[in-house]
Image 1 (cartoon, rainbow, N blue to C red):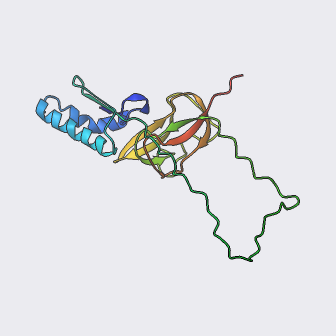
Image 2 (spheres, rainbow, N blue to C red; image 1 turned 90 degrees about the horizontal axis):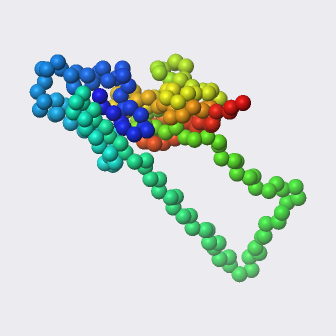
Length: 197
């Protein structure tokens, strides 16, 4: 089985692992050398999904387990926008100064930050909220979810990778639309703490 390692969840669900089983288990028909070649091909597919080298790489030979893990991407700071410099006006041109209009409203206060912790994409791919087109989504905003409950799917190279809640909570917000392309560790949902009482 190929595994994503860490808290990012498994890359292959049990159903998808069955598709890879012939690669790793041929009932003694495959030589160790051939098994190693095929496992290396699977690792190459996983590496092709990411632009960076993995932060962790573990191999277990007994019952074959390959684990790759990537550090969350560092988001660059937005570039500083220089202040606009007013152009010089020709002499004699009157300069208008803005006056406060009576009843003018003060600028709107920024909205408070959404309460909740993000649930992020386990890999680069296409995000889906439902198990199939036209089906009900796994979860809706306002629903309470348990730790480990599936919230969505990210499709990567025809692999359907589950997006699971890493803790119990209430789905405060769905951040991406069905069919959106997503990056590794990109927030997909906001989970608010479960209200007790």
